[in-house]
Length: 484
Image (cartoon, rainbow, N blue to C red):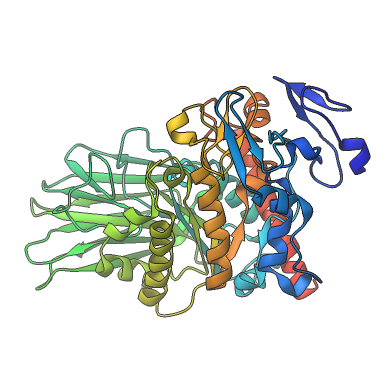
């Protein structure tokens, strides 16, 4: 579709599906509709990032016209409730639900991971994603897991918090259960206790102080059956022991050690199993930080470790000792960091602090692992608010959508910070907002049932689409890097 065919004016659409005064273009081979000059915000900037991060594939670093307009000074008009640039032009984004092109930037930074994405894997390829509720909900990562395991083999469900650490806890592909007698320490919220049991990779530690307290994990179908089970927890004086039953295999493990530390234990079966059970053996305390199900035959694993409402600075609350043990046992081939939404909804956000936190935690993980594991940042999705104190309409980065909706300026700042950090630290960056269609795409996504009415969280349909897009982008990046 040519630019002349896709141009539109606010309130007027040509060859478009109209949703609540929003023009949504579909089927364009270019991947998105080109708004007119009066609506040119952010879309051009999404195209320009590739030149910044992947100069090896571009012939110029000149800032495109649309990006220049995005970065132009804006004056907020409190009467019209629409931002204006220095030429007094109203800047209102007309969104599209079609994904923008060039969503994965600096893919060479994860080249060692991409090179292994070829055919059925005979060894484990493990991705660990840490993040907030988008990661915890597993709609997006679940789709990535489903699509990826069909192509590269089913390596298992991966790392999870033990049991059911909070009400509403969801797991795709497996079902967790627990009896009474377990208490939870979490990275944040009401369950967090600074003086509580040490925390690890998952952000949750479950503790029992009675004999016979049980935890169970069962595969929902044959795709998630497993023959290897790992259990990690806190060790120390007077700590208790557990019995693990995996099929016909029963083993007992003690967490008692002279000094406070952490340990992980493995249980192997000669057959694929559908259920594992963990039971405490005494009234001595047992504090469990994570469990993992895998297949010894290899394949892809996508572990989603999200804490609802969290920000990356909460990750600093976990124990170096526990995290080091779990990282050493997991040995991820790719670590994905997916934060930015909760930070972006904070009017008091200090972007320099958020950047320092992200840099420090990435360096910390690599130090504890002992090798330079590839990282991919996933930027915040397109999220909207009608609350002025969250939207911060006077902030130059705030994007005005239709019907009183805004993309909060701090969400856009978080996204740009992650792009800059990816360049500085040689990380990959996947543009989740761009995958949705750019700023204000939340409007058609909600209208089409791909995002919840809160304009923040995805539905199963939206998560499935995003997972497929990421798999496709990784495939394309692999082809570009390897030529096959």
